[in-house]
Image (cartoon, rainbow, N blue to C red; front, top):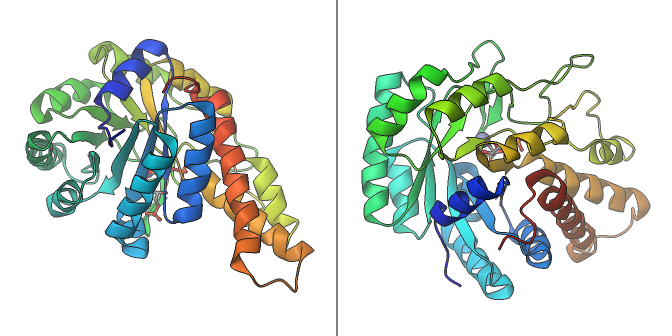
Amino acid sequence: MPLVNSKEMFKKAYQGGYAIGAFNVNNMEIIQGITEAAKEEKAPLILQVSSGARKYANHTYLMKLIEAALVETDLPICVHLDHGDTFELCKSCIDGGFTSVMIDGSHHSFEENIALTKKVVEYAHDHNVTVEGELGRLAGIEDAVNVSAEDASYTRPEEVQEFVEKTGVDSLAIAIGTSHGAYKFKPGQNPQLRFDILEEVEKRLPNFPIVLHGASSVMPEFVKMINENGGKMPDAIGIPEEMLRQAAKMAVCKINIDSDLRLAMTGSIRKYFADNPSHFDPRQYLSPARAAIKEMVRHKLIHVLGCNGKA
Ligand code: G3H
Ligand code: 13P
Ligand code: ZN
C-alpha cells in the first residue's frame, strides 16, 4: 500500500469516535516498535517527523525506513511534518514525499498565521498533501523552544471558523491544557483539560478533525524505571489517559505522542545497563528498547486511541 494523506483516516476516525496516533520517529528502532504494534493491532498510523528529527536522522534515511515499514506492514501510513515553522520547510517535505504537513503559525499574529498557513495549503493541496494548522499556544518544550506556562494560551473558539475558512486547512491543532514534554502538571495540581473549549470548537466546526499535541501520559511505570536505574525525573506528570480517550470520542482525530516513546526507550535502556553493566553491543540494549516501545504503542492504540482494528 502506498503512503496516504490524512483525509480518509480522519473522516473514518471522526465518524467512528476514535483517534489516530501520531507518533514521533527519529530512528529505525522507534519506527519498528511503532509499526510492529500497529501491524499486530491492525491500526492506521501517522508517523511524524519534527525538523529536529529530520536534522538528526536525515530526510532520506527516515523516508526509506518508513517505506520499509509500508512493505512490512501493508498498513495505511501517513508521513507528517510535525511543527513546520516556515513555508520553505513544508515545501521541502512535500517535495520529498511527505503526505501531510503541519504549519505551526501559532506564535504569529492571527492575520500572519492565516497568511502563512494559506500559502502552505495552496502548495500542499496541489500535491495531494493534507495540512494541519494551529490556533492557541501550548506550554512546554519543542525543538529547543521553551514556551513558559505564562506565554501559553488556550484556543479562542470564536476564531476557529474564520481561520479554517480563510486558510483551507484539513485539520486544526488546538490548545486546551495539554503541553509538550514530561512536566505537564505540577505535583499536587489536579490535571484538567478544557473540554468546554473543545465542545465550543466542535459546535463551530462540525465534522472537522481536531488535533491534540502534547498528549503523552508520561506513563508512571517508565518514570519509575528511569528513577530506579540512576535517573532523576521526580515530578514528571502527564495527561490522564481517560481524558485522552474522552477527547478521541469527540472531535479529536489525531493525538500526538512523543515523550512516552522517549520514556519507554530510555527507561528500558537504563534498566538494561543497570542489570548488565559490562555489555556493550547496541543490539542487546536496543532490542528491549524497541520491545518496550512496541508494547507501549499497543497499549495506546487499544486503550487511548481506540483505533485498533480500524486499518
Ligand atoms: O512537539 C515536539 C515533539 O516532541 C518533537 O520534539 O522537536 O525535539 O524532535 P523535537
Ligand atoms: P508530548 O511531548 O506530550 O509527547 O507531545 C508530542 C507532540 O505534541 C509532538 O508534536
Ligand atoms: Zn506538538
